[in-house]
Length: 380
Image (tube, rainbow, N blue to C red; front, side, top):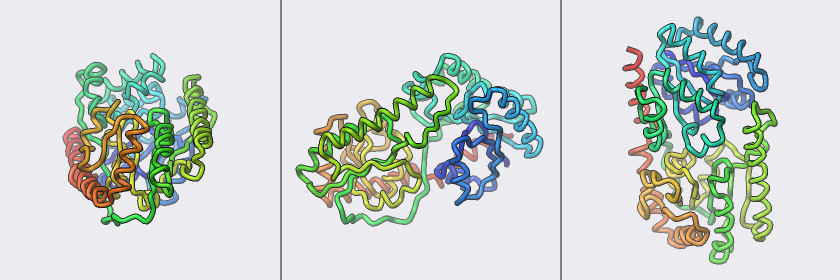
């Protein structure tokens, strides 16, 4: 079977894990992207991919025509069995590509990620949301990643078949449970919905009980955001992220925590951070199946999360069994961190249980077989 992936703007290393396993099972993946960020070229330095570069459509509406022409040429060249559709690009760019695929009888699968998140949808124009609705309705299958999405899909595309395929990750060799230092880790893109200010304020209280504690917060992204946007909404969002990161830096200085809290740029090279961390923090508004959360648990780093805005957090974190659930409150977050740093046997018990959760429920090697079966059904 051959897949053609469209609509993505670039390919990241975490994406490669999924498609590498498909390749091992005899499924070829071909990517048609413009890579305006340059991130795909960085990924290619360490991985082999079938990449076909499209015309960069950023701020060049006329370039859309060349994008579509290149896509038609690729359809003829590859003759794919299934088209996978992402919506990193404007849905209006993708709609004609899906219609062409339908005309030549190639099934299209739309991958539903954060673009259906109500928090994200608020930042989109009504026109973009209307185009997304059309796209959902003309694809044959919607693969959704989050448990809140069925209700939304029932409204937007009630007749489109859907399949729940949540994030999962590969299982690596068993890690060491013992750690040399009291390191607390956050690893994700810095966004207001993830409440890094709450983490920094909690560090002030943890420092009193553990003067040697180190909070490592990895995920600054303002330097990765080029000032190129198709609309004012995107420019506004970029400026909000820049201001948010500045506020975090100012908060560290104001609370006199420069010796405790370290803010680092976003990276895909994460294993060294997990190897030194005793605790992983993720008091975000959306928790379920976040990749960094899964990776921390697989590396036996117990997580502290919040279910205050995301009740589905409890689908993956069982309180005091494989992690800790706290409200979005600096004092209770600090108390949970201190509990794990103070009680090493308990911390290791949670770490073992966290890793077992990933092995048995979020194992990519197992879960990908179910998706492959669904694709073969669609292809027939």
